[in-house]
Amino acid sequence: MLPMKNSRHPVHTPAGASLTELMLDIFRANGALLAEGDRLVAPLGLTSARWQVLGSVALADHPLPVAHLARVMGLSRQAVQRVVNDLESEGLVAFEPNPHHKRAHLVVLTRKGEHVYQTVSDLEAPWANRLADGLTAADIDTARRVLSRLVGRLQADS
Figure 1 (cartoon, rainbow, N blue to C red):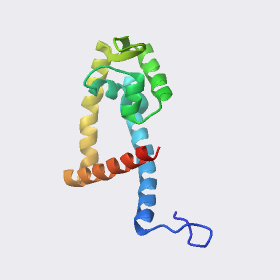
Figure 2: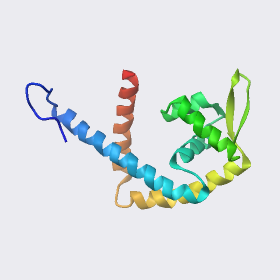
Figure 3: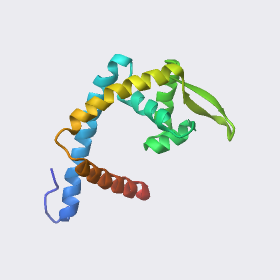
């Protein structure tokens, strides 16, 4: 719901009002994606958070320390560290020495982690295809560009 127009509250521009509605839609979409993601990967002993971190490790061009993974993901280092520690205790990731920093070890997938990530990928593709049914790639690309610009502005403001 948008703020009421009166002398005590600023009034949204049309774009500001639309953005507020979009932000609420993003919050709802995030909740729904996390819930569905949890259901999708639960049989593998994962949560959406573990899946997200596992994917970030798997998709990185080279091994990264937790702080860099967190930056790429837009999350706090502490939150990512907790998940990485959980993944390490499950044998899905391991820590390797970092030649550039004594204390910031690099996070790498183990063989078990690679297998679990591949299994998740095999589940994710058909799920994403079902979600995308009826949408065009162009519409999805437009949404991605808008979200990317918003993220850039938010990060510039922080």
